[in-house]
Figure (spheres, rainbow over the protein chains, first blue to last red):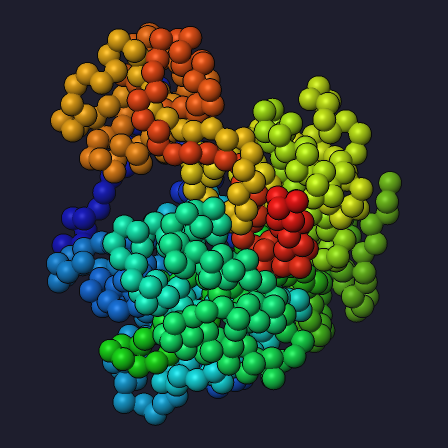
Amino acid sequence: MRRAMRVLYAPAHARMTMTDDLPPNPALLPAGMRDLLPPDAETEAAAVGALMEVFGAHGYQRVKPPLLEFEDSLLSGSGAAVGDQTFRMMDPDTRRMMGLRADMTPQIARIASTRLGHTPRPLRLSYNGQCLRIHGSQIAPERQVAQAGIELIGHDSPVADAEIVLVGAEALYAAGLARVSFDLTMPPLVPTLLDEAGFTGEARARLGRALDRKDAAAVTERGGALAGVLTDLLLAAGPAERALAALRQAALPPGARAHAERLADAVSAIHARAPGLTLTVDPVEFRGFRYHTGVSMTVYAPGRHEELGRGGRYICGEAEPATGLTLYPDAILRAAPARAVRARLFLPLGHDTALAKALRVQGFATVAALDAAADPLAEACRQGCTHLLQDGIAVLIVKETP
Amino acid sequence: MTAEFRAAALAPELETKLIMAVPKGRILAECAPLMARAGIRPSEGWNDEDSRHLRFATDDPKLDLVRVRSFDVATFVAFGAAQIGICGADVLQEFDYPEIYAPLDLGIGACRISVAEPRATAGQGDSREWSHIRVATKYPNIARRHYAARGIQAEIVHLNGAMELAPGLGLSRLIVDLVATGSTLKANGLVETEVIAKVTSRLIVNRTALKTRPEEVGALIARFRAALSA
C-alpha cells in the first residue's frame, strides 16, 4: 500500500506559470527556526555535553522522553501552563490528539509519577532535547528552543532548592559562563497575599497585572489597603540582602509570611554553600511561573538581555513535591565566550595513516585529500585548514598579511 | 546562531554604560527640569531639537542619553538597547511589552486616550448593538482591546497622524487618539465621547537590566524618586 501513497510534484517552473509570485527562496525557514552551521553546531553540542556531564556527576540520571505525546498526558498537571504554546496533530492510528512538547519538565514529571513512580525518593533526573512552541515573542522570536535540565523529585526543603541552584551554576561554569546571577522569586507569595486581603474577580486580575508590569502608579491606584505594602515590595527587588530585609519589615498576613520565610531560608541555604554566587530577589515576581508553587529562579548573565534558564518548585503528579531547573543552551551559547575551534590538519594524498590517527588522538581534526593537489598548501588553505601535514609534521599555516 | 553578540558578552561589566532613552518633542521639554533635579546633566546640544546628534553623554561617565521617538522609547527599553527610559503610559499600554517595568509615575505629559466622533453623529445609534466598528487610530492594540472588552470587533485603520480627518473622509466611524486640550478635535468637527485611559509619563526600566545590574538601575530610580518628592 505504501507505494500508492507516492505524491508527484509538478516541476517548479510548471507551478510558477500559475501565478506571478516570485518562487520562494529555498534558504528561507519558517519564522523562529534556525540552521546551526560550523563551528556553532559543534560548540552547541560541546556546551550541552558539558552541562549534561555536570548534571550526571551530581547523580542526576538521564532520561529521554519522546517528542510527541498524547495531549491529555502532555498537558495535564504542570503541562497545562504551556497548552496554548503546543503544536497538536492527530494520531492517525488511535485518532487521539497528540502534542509536540513545548516544555520538557511536564514530561519528566509524568515519567517520575508513572514509570518511575515506584523508585526510591528523592529521584534525580536530567534531560536535554528540543522543544517547539507555536509563537515566539518579538523579543525572543525562536520557536524551536533547546532545553537541558534537572529535576529533583520527592523532597520539599530549602536544601533541595539550593542544590538545584548550585548544580545549575556549576553546569553554567562548565559551559564557559563564570559570571551568572540567579534571581529568586516566590510565585505564590503575591496570590496568597491577594487572597488574604480578599481581592477577587476583576479587581484581583487588574492588580495582578499592575504588579506583573511593576507599574507603581497602577498598583497605588488599584492596591487598596495593600497599596503601601505592595509598593514597598515592588521597589525592594534587587540584591538578595536588601530585598529580604524589605520583606522582613513588610506587614504580611500569616500565609504570605510563611512564603516569605521559606524564600529567605532558600537564600540562606544557597548563600551558606556558595557565598560568591550573585543572588537577587524579587518578592513580587510571579510572571511566567504559572505551574510553580514555591521558590523559583531565573538565570541571567551580566550584559545579556535574555534568560539563560528558569526553574522552580512544582507539584509532580498528584501531590509529590518537586523542583527543577531548565537551562536554555541557545541562550547560553550566545552568552558564552567563543570556544577555541579545533585545529584542522590537511592530509595530502598518500599520507601516513598511522601518523594521522595519532594526530587525531592529539586533538587535530584531519581533512584528507581525495585527489592529488598540485599545491597542497594552497589546497589546505582553500579547505580552511590551520595545519598541513608535511614530512611527517603538522605544520602551522601562517597567512601573510597583505 | 549569530556571532555579533559575542564581543558584548566578553565586555567587562563595569565598563558598559547605562543608556537612558528619552522621547523627542513635547515630553522632552517637560522632562528637562525633572532630569536636572535628578542630577542628570546632558552634554551640549541635548535641548536643541535641531541637533542631528541622537546620543549624548552626561556628566556621569556611566550614563548616556538617547533621544528617540516616543513610540520607540518602549522598544529600545524592551529589547534592552536602553536600560531605562521615559515613556508615556499610552505607549506602554499599546505595546504591552512584558519586559518593561514602570516603577515610577513621573506625573508629566498629562493627557488622555479618548474616543472621538464627528459632532454630527456623536451619540447616535446604540453601541450595545454593534458587532463591529471601524476605528482610525495610531493605537491599534488599545482600540482593539477596548472594544473587544465590550464584545465589539474593532476594524482598525492604522494611521500615524491626522486621525482627525478619518471620519470626515469616510475612513472610519470614529477615532481613538491622544487628547491633551481637545482643540484639534474641535477644529476638525469632532467631540470626545469617551476617555479610555488617563496618561502620564512613566520612568521605565528593562526587566533584565533590573535583575542583572540592580545597584546601578536601582540608584537611578531612587534619584528620580527623590527628584519627584523634591
